[in-house]
Image (cartoon, rainbow, N blue to C red):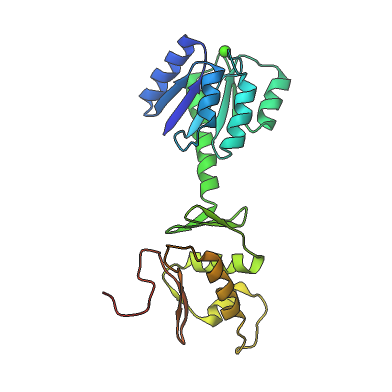
Length: 235
Ligand code: CA
């Protein structure tokens, strides 16, 4: 867990760094708004949480928060500031801060708020399904393969979700029909084959193996992409 501390008061920074490190967090620091803004504009993945002072030399902390929200929507930011007027607090929370702590603060309380913000972030991650290089966001209903966004119709999305909840299992046409289509189709209907075909084409990515395998007479299977994609004998 890496926490970025944005704070221009060196005494507070050193107090936070010492305390957070003692709790097992890795800590990075930025001492003014311009430095914080530069870090906020980087591609990211480096930080798990940001503690942000609002009153900063250089770029204002409010602007830093806006940049953080735009570039890293999932990164929790806790505002840590002496400004305790209600308007600023409301503004900060509306602007997407996970929480707001007023100086002076009790370190134990700050730690509890950090843990709470990290839990909320982890719950958001739990709204995703992943099978090898395939990722499905259950809230936004968008799929990604190897970083490429794949837009799906409602039915394709339900179909992919069903496959991703049962990776590497052979799913019969009947199973797929009863889970993905609420009303029973005629047993002879080819609607499953048609939609698996649509999905297959959307998932196909040049240079990557096909993920949806057809097993004659049995149904379909979503393969982890490192498994052989042909139904031939193993090498
Ligand atoms: Ca300050």
